[in-house]
Image 1: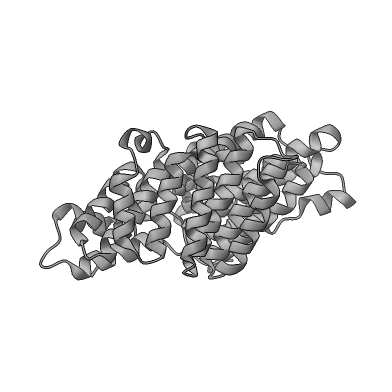
Image 2: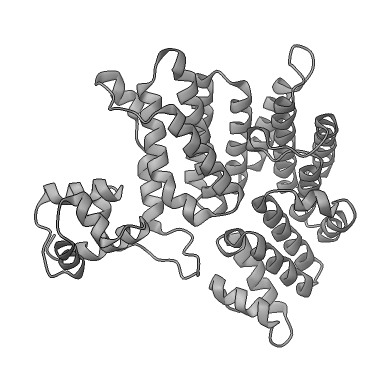
Length: 409
């Protein structure tokens, strides 16, 4: 332990938790001077009991304080560090429900508080604040797992429902940041929990997260088959009610199926699935956010454009963007959806050789949700392509954004 820069790790995580030295010292029962000396390496941390207490206050695994320095990103937003990936992984590897089977579960957080925290996390995701979300996820995962393990009886489905949502949030943001295997693990967990929540629609939307992760891992065909299978089971009509929530989940299953089909070049399936989703959106009657889907007529068109990009038809994607997406309805969508679409259209413009408009789309997306552009590997690929194909120096706004992203020619 003497050779490890533990003090620097303590300072790092204290800063990530937005905690002053004084606040940290008060919670630890030490003086501010003591904390300062530890962080500067003047005072040694040679008691494991103190180290574990520090880890508990900072909400990190004690091994992270004793291990290697985190691998830092170079982008301005510092979207996610490998040390945070490790913490999320550690939270996903917990099995609180199994431990509770043998031992009494610790006092769980109140479900009302959990519900507020989960709603806040969803909004943080849909506003594209990925760095903030990844820093909050480990604790949210631990709290949701503890609640799911502790609450029984009538409240058990509610606790399971909240945990299933947290797994979905984790899967969605991890996939965007390129952590595909962890995204699949979280999504797979969400499907298992959805069964205990006794909510077919939660299971349905969990399926879309699993399939999105599978597509990102290069497993588009099984993703397509699973999406279509579950969509058929949840289709409104017959014994299934025709509710706004069901239409939204059913529609998103179809759209995710279309994206999987586009990855394997199955144009006929893409068109069929998107047209069926459009019928569901018409029945829904507008753009809504049931089950955090942002499903509606506008999102259908966004996926039509995205599928065209995946099929390599950038011209078609740009045409959909210009002719089929009404500006008022597009502007009413949450920032993540709009910035994601602008990234897709940047890819479309790049496919047809229009690097000037491709750069403009990235700039527009960056103004809406910087993390969607600066933190996603696919956006870095587009920016690299723009810089490589631009004659002479790129426009200063594009060059400045590239610098923020840490992208060079």
